[in-house]
Image 1 (cartoon, rainbow, N blue to C red):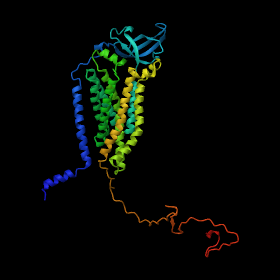
Image 2: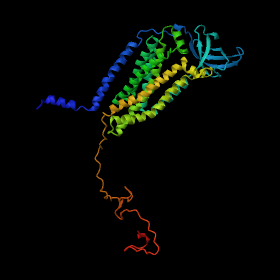
Image 3: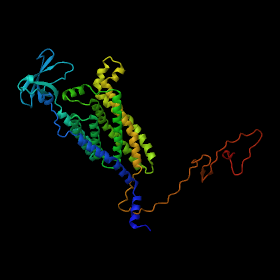
Image 4: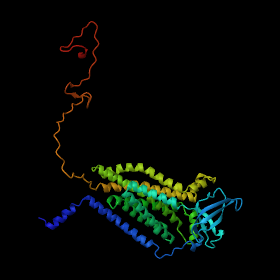
Length: 458
């Protein structure tokens, strides 16, 4: 007889459920990635870096808010209008200044009562020449829209909606506190984007959906797809000789006055842009597989993958179209400008500004398409090992019901089953009726005994 302690330990190891082994495997796979992400964020964060402000790089303009009180057409020339603005803050708050504004089809239209923003040079607050009219104030409309958005999310999702809003705030904090300062401090934009995307992914998915095998599976699918997007983006950016030097990037490099990896900045935008849609795909596929497993615990991993993949194919077309339309909408002014340039379609598509959007769109779309089978396969393997919860037992035993009347067996329909072998107990075997034979001339038909009339003729 084996020792008690040894036999007990052996039986405990053998009795470990498959779901526990899967959870341990997921933990082993994800913990090093989580640790690497945290360490990378610590190393890349610009500790002690003194980031230059606007005044340090030659941007001396200070925003000042005001209200339009008067508009005089032609007050400063034929193609100029004079707009009087009463300032509500700044060094000359309460004072009104006339500001000339060009009159052209590209200029915005102002009306009396508009809340606007002036650009103050910071020299002499009493002089009108120190101000320029640059924009409208949009604080209140955006605030109202944000409140409506939060109300809609919470009203529909309730606790889950509140967690989703918290995840959105965390994503914004990672973007503004880590990603942007690290890139401005001279770190590699691609490396910063990968680490930042990892922080956002872990925070958003686990905060929104909880710590579980299902969420960990979605995280793994997202990680693999992000890695694929990064590799393909770097490869095709190099093959296409994309520089990332569009007009906005050139202005940024000029203002900073320091070297900036513009191609890496392009790839960073592709990764961050695809992250939100990737989360949607991986979570949807994982949830679909888990629900299939819950509905039918007898489905194998292969069957779960096949059913989940059919769902994913329907999801794929809409997701890819979403990403393409998002990039096309962002690049719409560029596309309009190129469409009237008289250049051929090939020249337009291969131009720097359009080609970089094409690379970002197609690379991100490939990552999204790949995320469907990858995540579905991972979810099918993991879900097949999970224990399906049994239905809850009733709290109190059900009261005995009154005896019911014995159920009278239904008579089988004589046309059930094979048409030629159906059986009706009341009428016997069913036989196909035959038509009466035509009487031959000069011969009388003999009636069968016990039958009369034409109904008994054979």
